[in-house]
Image (cartoon, rainbow, N blue to C red; front, side, top):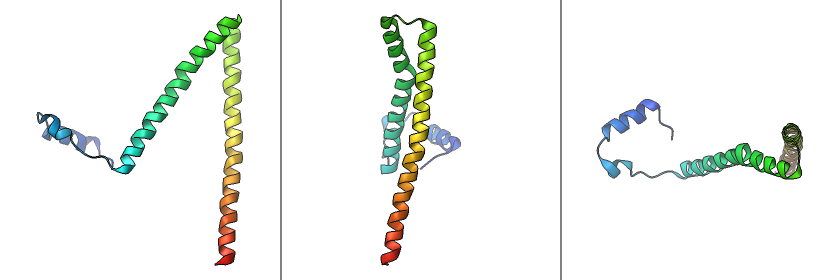
Length: 111
């Protein structure tokens, strides 16, 4: 369930000063799943955008690669990974669609 900003402000204003009693509520199953997805997605984004480049810089420094070359290699690596994800994503989507269509054709034949 999604609330508007106005509804949240009104709720906060009505429950001001009530302490923990106002904050006791239960999340639905869908809301719990969304919270877990959001936490995992945020952690993954933080890791890819901050930790991987720092680690790659550390490895490049130990290998004696200059900063300019390190940035070029980092750019090449991210570009190749992006292209691989784009190509493999399309391929796996086609296979999934074919599998679904094949299943539907099989079900239509026997019904």
